[in-house]
Length: 314
Ligand code: BDR
Ligand code: CA
Image (cartoon, rainbow, N blue to C red):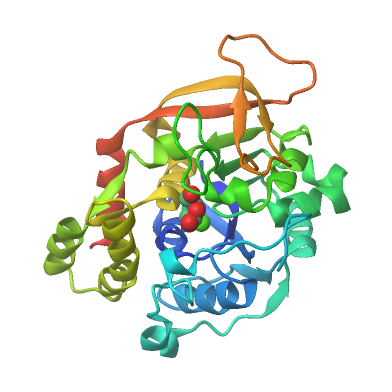
């Protein structure tokens, strides 16, 4: 059965690819896309997301602009990773495709989409959880109708990519993570230690786009250039992680997941050096004060890459 989803993004090079994948995958019906400040300011995210939408069929998708600021923390962005426009500074080149779409406000749009949907909604969040938390704070009853929230974020037993231990999305708005985790809505976390098992090498993009000359393949070739140059400088590999496309693929094809565990999860909302860090107990024990969430720990990488290639490079 098809899954009805709301996709919440902070476009972002890997978010851009995740959006295209979500719109291409036959297992998903994308009912709404909402934007949030994260990699870049929400105004840039919103413009860039419209450009991405214009590259493919987005008929029937509603669109919403979301939060410009985190619930409590001061702003933190990553233009050095994703470019000033979040699209590796390529938006201008693709601007003529920009979707002409009505822009609503994200939190009310999320709630309205849930109320109107005949099938339960899954929320896929590939950015900070600010919009989702705001929707919960506004109308928890409606939000509890959500089947599952699948969130890219956190890092377990691994390093961080924003500070020593924290992953970017959860670092930007740890208070939002806390609200979402405690809401009682089933939460599945796709953490950094799993998403970094799917690095996409530059040479693979060159090979794939050499085979396919579609608009999407040309766009992916262009949009990943800046992102991959950043990884080359900062991570010493010529490529980029596909954090957000993996999160979308897991929502569409759950059999990609090889192992998932249930744990009590806490997120540090205050630490000077540790904000956004996610903690769990090692054992199966559950903490009374910490909500239980599902955490993906292992995926079938081959399956993911087949899905990636077959839907984006045809
Ligand atoms: C996450 O942070 C962003 O930079 C990416 O788009 C991804 O969602 C990875 O930590
Ligand atoms: Ca993202």
